[in-house]
Length: 346
Length: 274
Ligand SMILES: Nc1ncnc2c1ncn2[C@@H]1O[C@H](COP(=O)(O)OP(=O)(O)O)[C@@H](O)[C@H]1O
Ligand SMILES: [Mg+2]
Image (tube, rainbow over all chains, first blue to last red; front, side, top):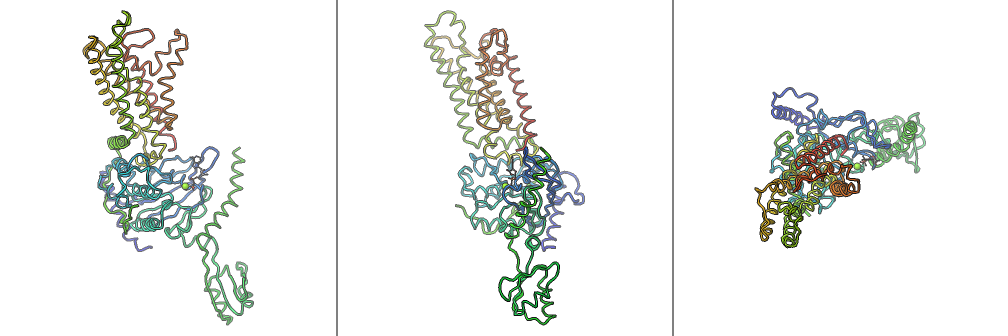
């Protein structure tokens, strides 16, 4: 378990107590539904003929940044709108912190969201935008100033949001997500339009939010960004789940890890390594690319046969490669079922 | 450009937990309405038109009075002519009413709004209530001012009247009431149609074009008095006439249309994807 686990448990208990007091009943034992989690079950969304999300099930857990990854049009934004109850699922269901979003009495305190399409009236100032949202659930003005400072919009807070740059708009979106100090955060492509400084800032913000025990779901179509921010990944393509895994596992599983071996005795080693699950490629004399065996195993075999190794390096596929591989698969292998589905529907 | 704080102190202050209540949503919608420039501009336009046109009509009437024939003089309503500006003011009131909702759809704000109030209907009730209150106050005041200033002009010909005269108070406050319900109807249609252009076209069509179209129909069909605007404007009629409903009956019919539109808007808002 990660180092923040204890703080997280403490935090859950505090939340249960506070929640219990606010609801006016004694704080009962923190049940499963008190955990800040997003649970989607067989979630499906059709827009007319088009299926945007299909049979999607996943759980987003607290304490880690979960990357919601998929190429453009994969259904990330649609899923996020369904989590927030903005779009009704055609089938399946999704709950946040144990309930449908619309059943929460203090939604801004449960879930903070920043949607992809800017959800801001262009004619209103950032301050009044946040204030109008804040008062719906009795958040004091002081908190509005606080989140404005937090995202660094103080100087422009009284200006019309319509004049904001993309990056400023994103930061205003993040400010509104943080307004209610929510246990769960949903951010749809938050780094879009941000400069390097802003991207770094978001990355740290998301990590610290997760470290406090919150549930953080961040969508992106950029694998490289998720590699640096997320610990867990939910990958979708064409509305379907492709992978639900840790970032490390994802890289290992998707592209297959190979080991680079350099030795003067390459031909003998190649024969020794051969096996049903093992492939050995060679791109230069004395260099082998081995997949299907760990570096430990290769080293052991070489030692057993007294082969001197000049190099033994596990090769990690880059996250971007892994992602491309997976989504290419999604395109290749998902296409027939979709056609089939449409064929039957017609 | 602004500078970012070095360290993101994510949850610096504990936010006070609170449930969404209708009262809080009302407060939110009041903040939203008063923090848009279009509100001030459009409401000012409505008030200026209401008073300005009233004064203009009164001045013209005062000038023409000596040249009017007896029948015309008998039919003349000093109260009615002074609040006649409502005909144009209703356009501004309708535009703003539609914008109260369609502006949120156009900008995407509606998603933030409905995320904050996921049960949705409190938003519609709050928008309707806030806009109704604001138009009622602004337009009733404008109507009173138009009436009083108008009578000052008309008194030059000794044809001015007072609020105590039969029907005068009904017409003056009726103008405010009629415009208020126009506003409410526009909020409902804005919610139903969601687009600004479509919403405005629908309200204008309903209030102004439809009566013109039915004028082409034979009078024996007599549906014209049941049209929304004709029914509502019965409250402002100086004289009882055939093919005009009794003042409060007409107004009640107009309110009924509005209630139906609001109910449809509520159903649509609750059901549709945002
Ligand atoms: N309101 C809508 N009406 C019709 N089609 C939609 C709507 N929203 C999304 N889609 C379609 O659903 C698919 C998924 O879109 P989206 O969720 O925006 O993907 P992503 O956010 O992953 O880029 C796309 O093919 C898109 O065209
Ligand atoms: Mg998207």
